Image (cartoon, rainbow, N blue to C red; front, side, top):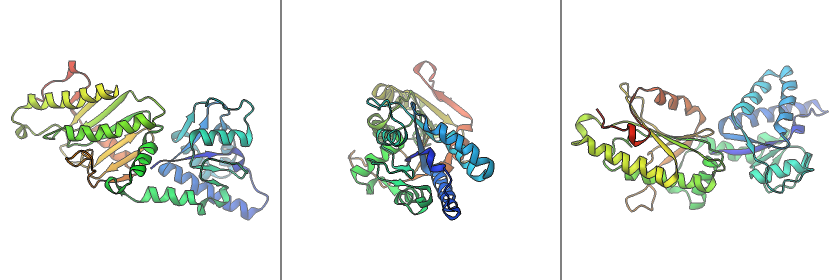
Length: 323
């Protein structure tokens, strides 16, 4: 699950006590590794606090290459710039700007030494970060798999919010979608996820990319019926329901590397143990389906993308029966 933070530029200022400076550095290392594992940092499009952070990082990086490298990776890959909210005070700077950004983005944590009254649940100084409740929650979410059927409705909604709130594109990987006897079961699971994106997403996503595999030649008596089912009951249905351009990639997998099922956005990598057939046949109860957040899986997703395309469907004009 994704956890969000705001960094106060002044949190990078050196302290007068050398022991406190060492603890602050260790806390910053913990914090940055956590962001890389399953976090994002907010910037706002008016005060651009992270530009000030980047300047301080550049200065610190000359003396501490490890800290500089971690900050550079975070600012390059895991920064989310928030639009200026209505009512953002024109004079906002310092603590007022931090509060406005945290409250508008509903940040989980502010890394700062200032006294700021927040709607967010955690305000922590770098030197205290490693023992903070925020770090405990972030690490637990990163290390432990949870099952959809064991979640409460509130927990599932929070999962959808954390995954999709800042998503700009979506990819689904499940080889069984193209081999299913009834693709509607997968469609219902994908639709549940996309409805969550509609409720919580701040950014428009134009495309949904689905990576799957076509059935073996001997597993379907009529491959034209299979094409029609995939085209009408999945691609066209999702396009009508969610206004997305749905692209389906049918991959060749001679070495059998396409096994695990994944959900990917520009910020999140999630493994679903059972895949996207989420619901029991009554349509309301969830199957046991362990989900695990792990950005380290992006390499495996890239391997699937790089498999040879047997067929690619993007619109009715270029879909064709599987050869």
